[in-house]
Length: 217
Image (cartoon, rainbow, N blue to C red; front, side):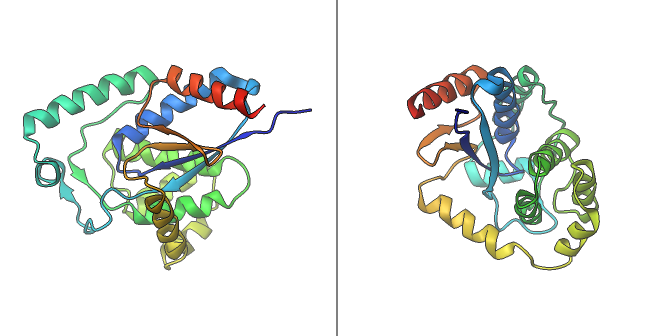
């Protein structure tokens, strides 16, 4: 009898650089596990900056205002991120602004309703656009390029962006995770019971998923 797949809900924000590290790391762990530990991966919304205006904000000013960190500490964090990204195959660019990600989450919600791996492909495309090429994920053309890259239906994506579709659903899911105590991302929730928090290295994801799968059996 085939093993029941583990359900992984990856709660994250396109604006979160550690979410890129975490996802690429999880990808490596899943590749190592192969068919030994089958999983169903789904992406859930979380906004670090839900009130970010359309014009965005300078990243150094944002970090200083929100966290009280000086520019030199930002440079140190970026160096660590680049190193961790390189370890898992993600190349960080020199991003200068923070942008609003709500429309990106609306598209990801829609993509999650489609069959196949389109949602995962869209998530990867959006993270690469934002953190790799410093593109604005609230810009319609950037979003549509990511949709095309993910192999999803372009005309349907245009309809969604021209409306408020999936807005209420995204807000409801965000509230759901906040009410469950998720206040930082990435957070991978496995089978609704187990939490793997942060941009962990691949071997940590692999070990955790093996233990959870063994317990489920």
